[in-house]
Length: 180
Image (tube, rainbow, N blue to C red; front, side, top):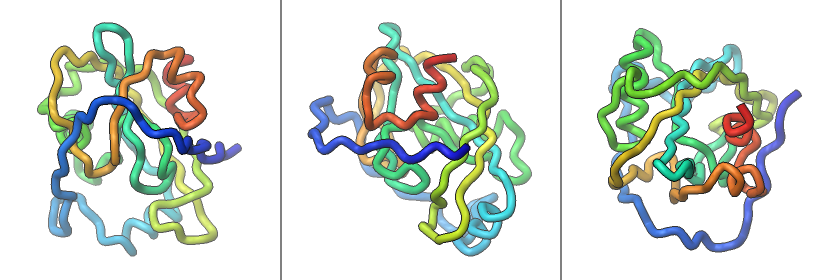
């Protein structure tokens, strides 16, 4: 059964800014598809993705407010789709760089589990089809502060597991990672 998008809070975020703007991927990047080609894939096939459950030493988890559908406006962990022809190691390193601005290897993380995410929405807002992800969720520790990219997220914040579970604007799929 699809999970509806989270409720978005109108409360201002009081966390310290951690981010700076960086350019989005451009056409011509290996594995990058034009919007109409990507829409065809999303309409007809599940996507395989990697999510990054980043924890500080105090247990707080990094969340970003999503700029794009599905789950636009919700607080969500960083992550991204695996591209055709990418190995899991290559995809992990690319996603960690794109989403966190860090050069990390998959061996730096622990596989938390495999999850399915169903959304009624799709990236383009087209009617008639949603998005289906098969997600390889990886937990990793962050030991130092860095500037985070603002390509997929408008803002970032750290929440303890209890705060994350209680927050109405954190997407249910992220709450499932904490419940695991």
